[in-house]
Image 1: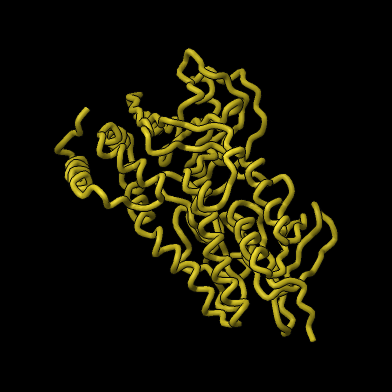
Image 2 (image 1 turned 90 degrees about the horizontal axis):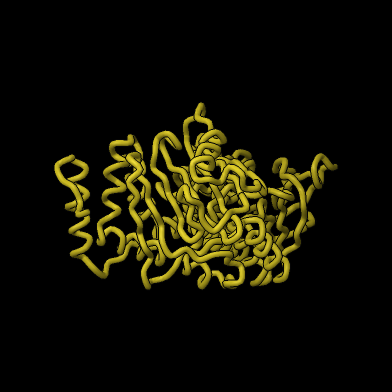
Length: 398
């Protein structure tokens, strides 16, 4: 008889992998959580209240609560979008937040190991053999499991190993610097507000951001243009906001996928989650909530597979995610494709953000993670205004 070491091996200990590992361990499955030490994804760190409630995350992990966002157009026109009384934008530091999630998975029974995934091997026996190296450059280790969950980020090694075509997923490349920040600067930095900057000089096809985290801030930028200098863009942004002299605590860069993979599983015993599955919201780049939601869907599908032995059960993860979030992703994808394509269109986009209807429904959708249907007239007004902008025949109220 072939010895099965674990029911599930989760490769990657970010929000998606840690959530999947915790969910499976909590219901009694044997789980190994494999993670590389010291890896932090470049991320603004924004989380909605729904994440805190849905995944049982304590508010002590919030380092700040932003009550407003500022959208900055190519002309330097700034549009403030106050959250109002419907919630807040929580801010977390990913090094602390991710480690808390991994620790929680261990507390409910997952076995943590540190190492780098190498490949999956087959020997004709039950289960998949995960080959990994301990630490950095250590000896190879082999562990067998009934199912492997790849939550190892965009350009996932697990996906490349088991899902043909996954290496071709389109990505935005993101880079940010975590700095010690002042409360404010004369040049315009405000430690109580999230800034999103839609200017081609900072990003020709995406945006730059300034997300305060209390005593620190994430200053970052994303772009799919390989020749564009992300580091140079962040340096310019810091210079212009009076942040050049602030201490840089750390910096990170990584690809961010632009759309969900068409297939998340190999039809046998491997499935991917989080960035590895491509579930980062287009246009906004928001990933933490969707990563954790994706991890939960994948854990549910993996549990059904483990209980029934039916590989077809794995398909339910993607179906469930797209049922609940696919429409939002589709709309945001269209938004990114059209509005981010030139500075002229970005100018119109930021102008639209000044509209009260747009602000209200934007924040409701962010807080609830779904399209809000409570105010059909507001949707109609937005549709008419958006159409006018698309045709270049109208302007929103200012």
